[in-house]
Image 1: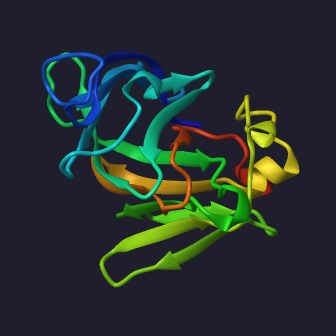
Image 2: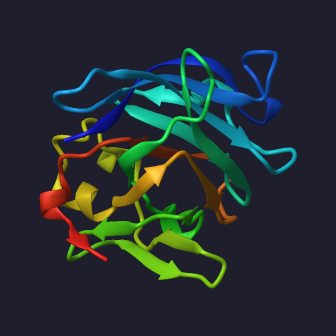
Length: 212
C-alpha cells in the first residue's frame, strides 16, 4: 500500500514559538513509498495560520513512533499541512493519503475536550464502538471530537499494536490526490496544561475500522 513515511524533524518553529529560529513552521523529512516504484523524497510542512498560538515547542515533532503537536487547554491551532518535493520545493501530490489521529479524549470531568477539524477529506473511518463523535459542517470541514475521559495510562505507544480502547479513540481520514489540507486542532477550557495530538501518515488498521 502506498504511504508517506515521516523520518525526522528538520525544523521546529511552529507559530514562531521555537525552539528553532528562522522561518515559522514545523518541517518533517518524509518519503513517499509506492510499491514497485522509486521512492520520492518529500517535505511535510506544517504552518500555524492563527496568531499567538499556545503550544509546547519542545514537545512538537515526534513522540516515540508518532508525529505530535501540542495545544494548550482553552485554545486551538489553525494549521496548513503541505507536501513538497524535497529537492525542488515544488508542490508534491500524493494519489492517496491516510492519516490517523490517535488518543482523542478528555480530561477528568469531561473538561479539556480534544477535537480535530479537517477539510477536503474523501472519507473517514471509525470503529463500530468509537469514542469519537464525527460531524460534517457546511463550511467543508469535518469535526472529530472526543467523548470519553482518558489518562496517561491508556496512551498508545505503537500504531500497529493498539488495544480496543485505543482504536476506539482514533480516527483515520483519507485524502485523494492531495497536496495541501487544513486542520484546526482544539482543546476546550478546563485544564491548564498542554494536550497532545498524535498522528501517523499511514495505518494498517483499516480492516478494524468502519467507513463513514
